[in-house]
Image 1 (cartoon, rainbow, N blue to C red):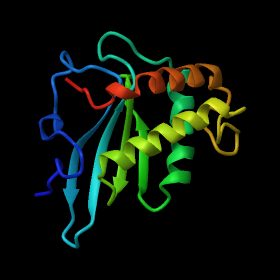
Image 2 (image 1 turned 60 degrees about the vertical axis):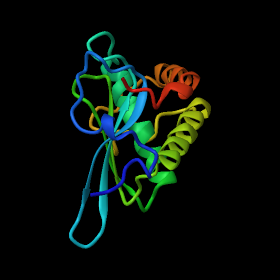
Image 3 (image 1 turned 90 degrees about the vertical axis):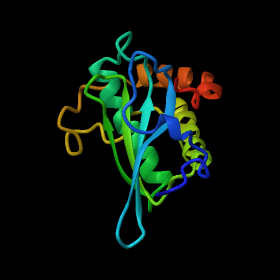
Image 4 (image 1 turned 180 degrees about the vertical axis):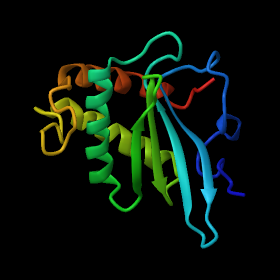
Length: 159
């Protein structure tokens, strides 16, 4: 078993958690799986809004997914596997290979959020790259990025 505490994560916040006690926004390690050859897949919860209280519009969710995809591809090229929106529209799942350090994940996420503020277009939002290319909202994404950055100090306060 991996020592997630050594990586900077609170072991009490792994696994399934009661959504009634979660305090968004936060970044948490949800689980990790070690392969038989030593590689580790880390599964993260990038929660942006409070479960059962608030949610992102589909345009915002779609755009933010594209922005996170571009950012993690850029900054974690070798570790990045996937980022996907939560069906409840409150955040994103992030999957990384062999990167479990809390400080690293937080720093890259912060860098991506700062970069979102300076963008003039949503990446991959063209008909050749996106199945619903006109369904985006950069302004709302930048507003969300700004709010998340303002609350960076509480990203580790999950419950």
